[in-house]
Image 1 (cartoon, rainbow, N blue to C red):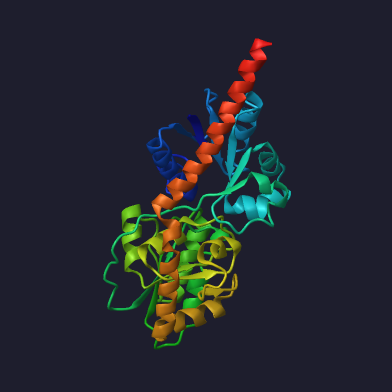
Image 2: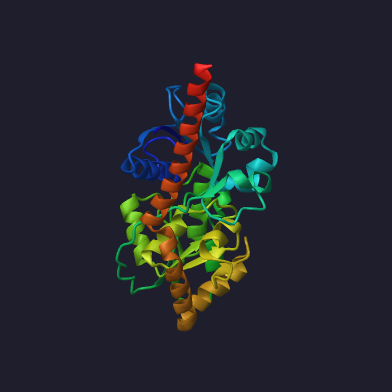
Length: 330
């Protein structure tokens, strides 16, 4: 099939939507499909559209639905779509109505999409596994990986670090781009406040993955996630996770995972960090539970889910093509 793959994240950025789009493009091309990755649909003919982000890709979604009302239109829902925009944003709401399939990146969203349950499909994102890197001997390194924006609650680990006992060897390494000057200034203030926190700005993907495989723990403190790439990368890297208890994390790590803390609660996070540093059995439990979830984020698992979705779309295209031929004969 000829597929228009739309992502609002521009080329040469390391935003999550762009990473997802480029990985899917590679997988779908390997399955024999013809892909064009675009920020906005160029109007050229396509058998199907896959659009990441219900609100931000709304212009492309409505244009394609108007031009090809009977063709497959897949809308991939991000965290801001699921947990904010579809509640009040009319563009996001219209995208849900126009879609023939709604893809979520974790399974724990039925309550949010009850009206559209028949359209929903799940494609869990993947990451390639690689050997661990020898951890730093000088400290107990904890990694935070993600661009600095309010949805990520980026300084919760920094706040927790200030509550650790003096004897703790924990140091927080934070990588990610500041999306505005104010949040960059906030990161600088946190570094001035505590030597336990160091922001290292954006890194190449290769360097980010090396730091991931070196860290003893990863913290994901987000307030909303659709199924974070960084969780998948940590699972594939064998790095135990401490995470905010939000649906996007629970959908990937499981309801009974031992490493959750309440959203925005740095005291609870500090207690978990100290426990993971001091209690070998607890740390081993986190590692074991993450290892059990790692197959969920394998590339073969993601590719198989995409292949099932494409089979559905191709079936729909065949049905529509047959309907048109029969109509022309009348």
